[in-house]
Length: 363
Image (cartoon, rainbow, N blue to C red; front, side):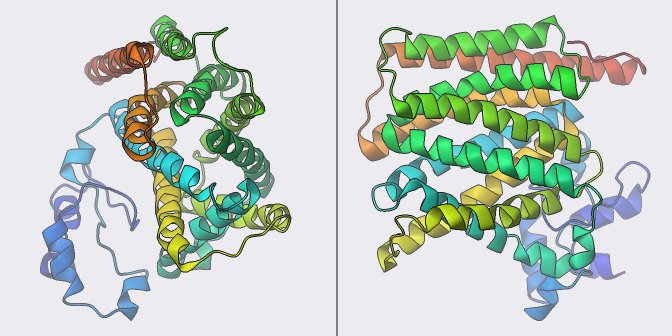
């Protein structure tokens, strides 16, 4: 009765068809929710009620999300993550004009942890209970070192070039997933990964790009982030996605603070908005990425990262006046085509698997 009074569409769907649309008590669980129902519910509860476990804006899975296959949902989540990551490139480039890289990594860790506090208040400390802390620490270490190298690259070279170098990451991830996760990507997925990497090479045109420390750091970041992504995939089998994001940034604060002490610059009032944007985009990217890996194979959803390239190239031109030549757009076209192809293949395979239970995923 409470769900009916609140206008929670997801809960109503769950009540009508509990076996088809199971409840999901997670305040971050679905981006597809009824805004009007949420606004109506806000008028009936107080501020302190927002953080109670029983206060949910989306207790049931939405009907739209429930009708999507796991691979398609993974692709959609990773696409949303790409948008957040494109914004992070812009924000980090802007902050790098004032702050050293280690301090930006520290801000990112602190803000990412703070933005997860509403979830922690609403669920309680019990949500952080885990038996896999060593894996959390391993994942955090690779993420921290990767973040330092990545932001060094963003600060020292054109954004489109830095992003293109990060597209070596899918090759690392597909190989690591095959060995560590026992995933068996088939010929089509390998071909799509190689095609996307070829598109990045078209943009870089080997032999014409200056091999700088920023470029080397970006390549190192790609390898480190690949290892961190494998850790994320291993954790998603048993861990809460929100706990994974909270632990990542909270555990990262101590090592990031040590690095930030060297060359610390006090932030001014004009930096507040960029720092807030960094926190929002950081949590949004991790939330989207974590959920993508929870519902789809790692070697599939990582391919969607290629969508970042045209987004960042356009944003860098619009905000910083960094121009992109014809080769950049040719490479972007190859990358987007490979992403579309694998998305189409996965959607068709999911429909065939639903019609023929037991069919393996070897696409």
